[in-house]
Image (cartoon, rainbow, N blue to C red; front, side):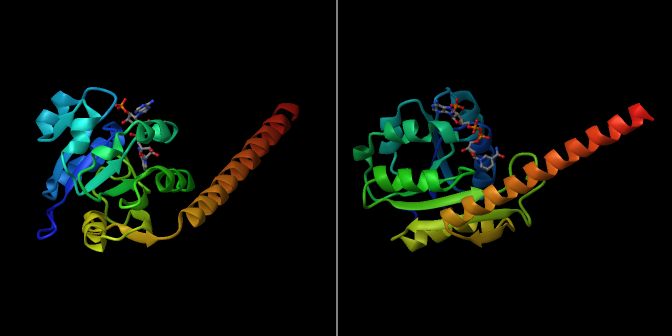
Length: 206
Ligand SMILES: NC(=O)c1ccc[n+]([C@@H]2O[C@H](COP(=O)([O-])OP(=O)(O)OC[C@H]3O[C@@H](n4cnc5c(N)ncnc54)[C@H](OP(=O)(O)O)[C@@H]3O)[C@@H](O)[C@H]2O)c1
């Protein structure tokens, strides 16, 4: 294990847009990355200096400090459910980045071995808002089940050291706040649409 240095061995599950986006910064910081995904990203990973595994068993066998789940919300339960978790060589920190939080928390608590740590996170930025760096962008996290504080804090440091606003809150609080803001956005959108339609009608009738 790489606990004596700052660098971590991180395995990314789901190497799509967001997985690649996070990988770029993690590589820049000196972490060692591996990846696995439904699609074959071997070529891209070769160029990025990442070991890509087509086979999930070989991926889990690679002995990582952190397994970072970057799959879509709808595929998470299928993806995690199909992992042969008995192949894990030692207690590992599982981190998810889904933009909803209660679903991954409940799923990971249900399916992961008791000795695995769980950190639920929502980096509230992406390839567009974070294209010029992560300074002042919000990173939400919930230490759902952490026994190895050293590995967890090294992982959080990836985002803190880029200047992210680190916000610790429960998954439940996160989802409540997200639902409220979606409600406000939706309501403002509806008012704006009816106002526009009202002014259009007035202009037509004048
Ligand atoms: N994009 C953002 O700005 C952003 C910000 C914060 C959090 N997130 C979170 O990051 C995660 C990934 O987001 P994304 O932007 O990369 O796009 P996405 O469409 O939400 O997810 C794409 C990823 O999911 C995998 N995937 C989709 N369906 C699958 C299935 N049936 N079986 C196995 N794998 C499947 C894809 O694998 P393949 O590529 O191998 O097909 C790809 O790695 C999401 O959970 C999202 O909530 C995204």
